[in-house]
Amino acid sequence: MPFVSFSSQTVLSNTTAVSNLFIEEHLPVCNGDVVRVYLYGLHVCNSATRYDNTITHFANNLNLTQEVVMEAFNYLADQGLVQVLQLQPVEVRYLPVARQSARLRKYTAGKYDDFNAHIQALLSREVTQNELLEYYYFLQSLNVEPDALLLIAKYCIDLKGRDVGYTYILTVAKRWAYAGVKTVEAAKERLDAEQGDTASVVKILKALKLKRECDPTDFELYTKWTKKLGFSDVVVLSVAKRAKSMQKLDALLLKYFELKLFEVAEIENYENTKTDLMNLAFAINKKIGVYYENVENVIETYIQKWRLFGFDDETLLSVADFCFKTGIRKLEGMDNVINKFYKLGVTTVSAIDEYISDKVSADKTVKAFLEKMKISRNPNQLDRDFYNTWVNEWNFGADVIDFVAGLSADKTSPMQYMNKILSSFREQKIVTLEAAKKVNVGKLGGVEKQFVRHSYSAGELNRVFTNLDEVEFG
Image (cartoon, rainbow, N blue to C red; front, side):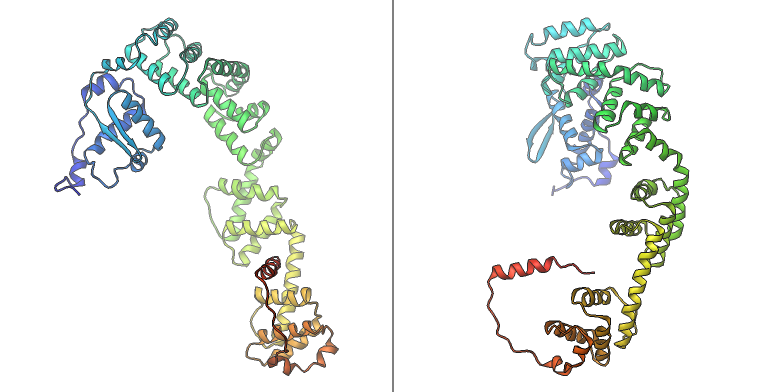
């Protein structure tokens, strides 16, 4: 904590001084992120002792990644504007701004003479010293071969003309370098690939009614759609007829990819039935008691998936009604119910009705034995689990269960007593009502059969509990 300092309000009300040398010599050739990092860093230097003066806060406040911030500071360090003192944790020191011409001494004399001559021959305008410095920095910082950059520059000139700006050339070059294109061979392979794709990209631009030449970004998007997302040219062209720009086309194809729609017929069916899907979405929302003004997300997140499961509109509305009546009032909850029905193979209205009927009938049976035990509440899941165990696991008939329920009626804990009696019957292999009536159940309530306790190894006990883990309830 410093002895004296400005308040945060004072710091915010003050100004940040920017060197005129930076504005004249560096600002024209720095990209936007570098300028943002440099200026914001100057501001932070005015309150360097703040607790949040870290690269994490720095990057978050600029809405940049830490990698981009460090790339900017490394560039600034190469220009002699800052020093990167250490990396863990990151520490950067701002330096006085010197004239940019001094930076030429950083590059070996004569190293780029051939490059300088060739880049000037390619362009119709004069190549400035600042522009050359930007090329040098790019070549050295990303380890790119000079002849590869010349091929990229020629490619940009073919697209934009001989007066193309160097920032455009470097933007394309950086994209290619980040994709691994750093050598002459790699650049030639990339150019050959794009040459092969040119006819397809031209058709897409024509379908979009865009009257311009192909751009490097067009080729990158085309590669993304066809190689990464897996769409055919036929599908891309079909969707392009409904889009107005490459960005809109990209957004549509990404949506279809997420919806697992890869054929023209599937996509057209989706678009043609979109109104029906919207009406269905509103109807389902109304059934379960929710409201969304825009239901596109509901369609894409839930309804499209439910239809893929095989549920028709009538069935989905029936499930929504079922959810509302059982207290499920959210789409997430309905989705959970749909998933369970799908796993059970219950995907039609009739199948759901039959499933619910079976469950209601089973509940009536469970309710009957609860009443026999003088328990007046409705069945819960634990009651159903007990009944399922007695009938399907322990193989007792309804008559035996009914008999023991009557015996349990006046007990303090009737369910506990009933489980104890039936467990004892099972141990003694008593399964019929006639055999059950002959047992003196009074003794079963308090007298434990004498037995000899055994000592078990840890391995034996582990095997027992492993088997228990495999037992499923319900």
